[in-house]
Length: 277
Image (tube, rainbow, N blue to C red; front, side, top):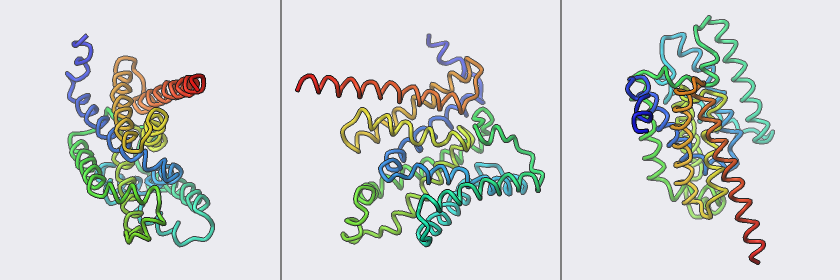
């Protein structure tokens, strides 16, 4: 049994993939509860798709996705935050416009610049192709995100639940909003090689949604979300190796399986509570 579990990691590329999977699972699942609480799922999807034109230009100039991570994520976060705050057409509408426009621009740039990029890997991830340099960058982004969340945890929780109250208390809500957008963008860009543009939302939202079904407090949902994210990432990587399946979709399906289990556990708990009353 132990030999089966350790067999994949006799290869260096699988060790790098495991590190990338674990860091993606931690960072995305950590931010997931905040994202769900603030109803920012669509925003996160827009951020993921808005990276495409920056990736296209970066690859054309000779950079990797990981090297573009920090500057791309900061630019995207500031731009999205500014447009949404200063438009009067509604948040969902503004996000939808940015989502579709940037995604279309990305494909146009890939065609015009004749960028050599595997669109399937870009959309669905190719964690097995992560280099040692990519691992260091992803780890650095993960540590940065976890550190900043830890430092500003109380303020971010307060702002997430009661933005008006946070402003009345004197917190810089504008700073907290942009900080969260930057952290969300950094996490998404750092995970693109693991699960891709299309599936990055699955590791961000599904573990957090699963945790919400089986926990009673926001704090506990964060820890359970991270646990579910790690299980989804690592088990998906094992499925990818042993069953010869694409890595990103495998991780997404494992997260979905956990959600289904949590959903039925939640239903059973409600039914038991109903009959006991």
